Image (cartoon, rainbow, N blue to C red; front, side, top):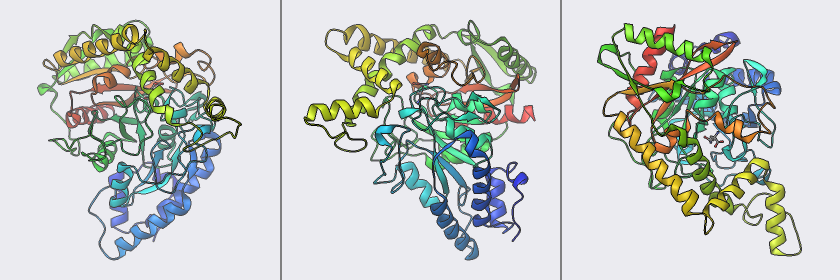
Length: 482
Ligand code: GLN
C-alpha cells in the first residue's frame, strides 16, 4: 500500500478519498495517520481542537480496513471518511465541553443521533473542535480553551461559533466537519475561513445530543471543502428522529449536486443586504458574479426584506431568552463544574458565576430580563411578532424566486481582540445570517474570492427543504469560479 503524500491529501474530495480506499491506493489507517501528522504540525498554532481522538480514530480505521479486505466496503461515500465534530455534539465516552469551564470535565453518556448515523456508516472521527462557549459568539474567542486562529492569517479570528471546525477544514486537518448554526455559526466561520458551510432547514437534521443553545433556532450542518462534500455529509446525517420532535424526514432527500441551466433560474437580490455596512470590495466581487450569472441567462430580480433592520434586535431578544432557559440546567449539581459551599444557594451561585464566561453570563442575564414579568410583552412577545413578519417576508419572496443571493458577512475576518470587548460590534457580524435562522430556512456559504488575502463568502438562501436546489446553484457557481 502506498502512503499518502501529505500535499496530495489536501486536494482530495470525499468521493476521491472514498474511491482511493476502495481501490486500495491507501488504507484507512494511512489516512488517519496522515491526518494526525497534519494536525500535530498545524494545530499548535490554529487551536482547532479541544479533544483529539487518535486512539478511537485508529480503531475505527481498523474496522474500515477490514471491510475493504472482505470486500464489504463501498455502500456509502462517507464510509472511512475522517471528519471532525464540533464540541457541542455528544459522542459517547468522549469529553464534550461546549468550550465552557462549566462542562470542562463532562464526558458524554450517549451518542447524538447524527453521531449514531455516522457511526453506522463507519465514518471516522478525528476529534472534537473548538467553538465559542456554548456556541455563543462570532469569533471563537469566547472559548474557555482559547481562540481559534484563521489559517489564512493567524492574527485574524476564524469566525464563530464553529470556528474550530471551519479552520480544521480550511487547513486540511480533516475532510469535513459537523457544526451547529443558531444565528450563522456554520456560515460565518465558513466564510471567514474560505470553506463551504451548509445550514439545513430547521428540522431536516435531528438535534438530539446537540447541547442546546436556542432550541427554536439551533440546527446541525456541515462544513467542507466543496459543495459536493457538504452535500455528502448532510445526506449522512439528515432525517426525522423520534428523539427530536421538531425533526422530520423530508420528501426530497439530499442528492449529489449537479450543474444547472441558469436560464431556468430566478435569483432574488434583497436590496437591504447590499446597503450600509457592507465592505465595498465584497460588494464588487458579488456584483461581478451576479453579472456572470445574468449573462448566462439567469433572471435577476431585486427584492426587499423590509424587516431586515429588526432581525438582529429580534434575534438578540429571542435567542438569549432561550439560552437562559437552556443553560439553567448547569447548576453545579447535575453535571459539570461544582463549587462545594455551605448552602445550596451558594453552590448554585458560585458554580454558575465561576463556571460560565462573560458572554454566557451576559446572555443569561439578558434572557432572564426579557422573560421577566412586566417585560415579557414589551420584549419577548414583540420580538416573536417581528420574527413572524420576517418569516412572512421570505415566504412572499420565495413565491417569486428560486433562491436569494447575499453576502454571508459584511466584512472579511477581523483581527483577534478587535471586537471582543464590544458585544454590539460583534453581534453586527451576524446581520446577514440571523434572518435565515429566524425563518428556519436552508442556506449555504461558499467561497467566491478574496479581499486583501482574506476569503469572501457568498450566501445562497433557499425555501424550506429546498436544499437540493441551493446545492445545485452553489455547485454551478463553484464550477464557474474554477
Ligand atoms: N454569532 C451568533 C451568536 O453569537 C450565532 C451563534 C450560533 O449560530 N451558534 O449568537
